[in-house]
Image (cartoon, rainbow, N blue to C red; front, side):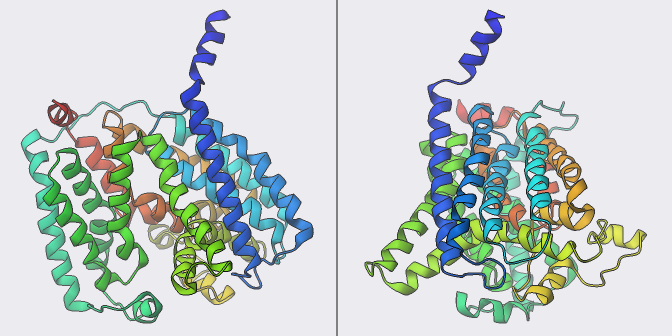
Length: 438
């Protein structure tokens, strides 16, 4: 009994306490950021500020905040990275739902999302045991592979530019993006290269200290913007460089929290500086809208919208997945994002696995079961990447939290290259990193 007590105490010491305090600071900043989003009426007709509901919103956040202890005691893994971003998304929904203007069973939705969060985090955080490598890439081939990825990506960019090449600013991006029409195979190649292959190559170059090649990788990522016309393509190089810097300064768990905390903190400070007329209006609000509203508000708002829509419309039963649609009848002829766009006038409204594989596919009652299944898939990524340096996993998967916050897990696995990244992690020779360290 005493041994167990000692182990428990040693499992939560000062390092874990500091990590928990940092996570709590992030929760506070996110709550303030969400308050700013609500009072500015950023989503009219969906949520609206009501001072009488402010205490309930704060109580929801406080009640769910102890979950950060799981991140304080857990080891870093791919699931840790994704799980923390999803935790903040759920926390955001618990805040926004108190100001909801939509009609659905909010109590059932609150219970469902909390249970879904626990069902997802349990495997995603704590199933990390390695799988035996049946296939291992030769060390020489692994050393050459990042350069091959650069060449292949350059070819994809060249072909893509023949179909679409427009240099437009953010204000015109959505207008011209609707006109982008790439062939199916090329579209898959563009998404996989930009979201999975190039970040993997960047992580390889950083690990082996090939700085020039790492810089070329970031440049190639930027060149996808005139083809894709997405914010992800435009800001991805800056994001990966930011992750690389903080990975050099702190360990991977702290880097995970800081990667979310610092951008949101800057946006929140800018918001109040703009309000006080101490910072120019346009750049301040553009940053706040691009970072705070997009990273914190939109993924949480998607849960609100999907809860409302599918409380009054048929469930998809996973027919939003093309392979499933070939086998079973589907009541929706259009992609779910298009259905949402028509129903709520919010543009192309994709959403995370909690909204699509959960709320839309199986409903609120069974959503925790779906979340558990998705958590097991993320846990597979943990096992396939086990044994790799934490910083390498964080950098190579650096864009995936943003992807998973905004698209279904099935889309992330196939279209965005997450499944391919899992395979690359699995066959990567662990000895290559021992030689690099030596």
